[in-house]
Image (cartoon, rainbow, N blue to C red; front, side, top):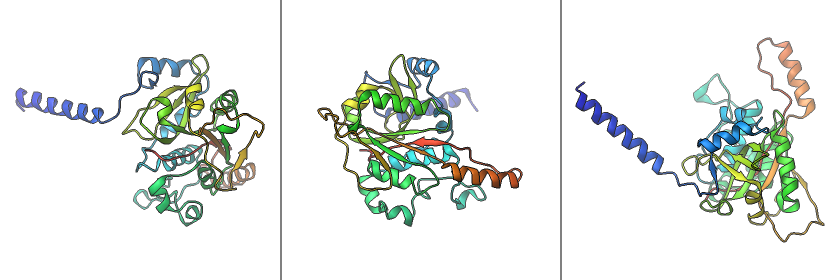
Length: 286
């Protein structure tokens, strides 16, 4: 191939790559991109990062603008190693996808038609996760303090097999524009920043966010829509600042782990899930 043609092809590829990158929105100055030099330094010094690698192994981009909660749950369930449904195009392999996670059983909690229009609430995510062999708790941040949120979330991120999914208001972070759901992947104590693995990769990259900004400047939490998830409450706490940020903790119940471990010992070579917990939360991407 002539050198001129090679140079031309290289230029076209470079322009295409630049155009693709330009489609994403610029980060506000108060946020630190994960792939930046500062972002990498925060990750290296972070002590609470047990969730990062399992989530990175199973990272997905939400398939529609209302599927941020679905994508987050898919990542967590796959990271936990929960027995997944069949996927015809991947047979004989199994994995959770943004299609097979939803079923007639989850439609009883949130119909797919409603999900497609308006996304989901915190309690609906907790209830859908509870249809799988996991333990789920929903904690509305409007019923706790910044310190309590920090302590709870960082503790889970420090423990192997635990995951945290948060529901937050993009505008409170300086992003555009409405409610969003994504998993947390790490916490750096020194900088007091959480790493959000944003599932809307077409819009924003993973970012480090200061705790006070992610929690204290969001909207009021939605009212409980289901009774399937355990909800923590602090009725006496003042609500002069109310938030939408929340945490859902999920994990294999002990009895389920014991059952699957026994089965795997009886079948050499079988993949056995480890006893784990994870956490999550909800709301639509806008």
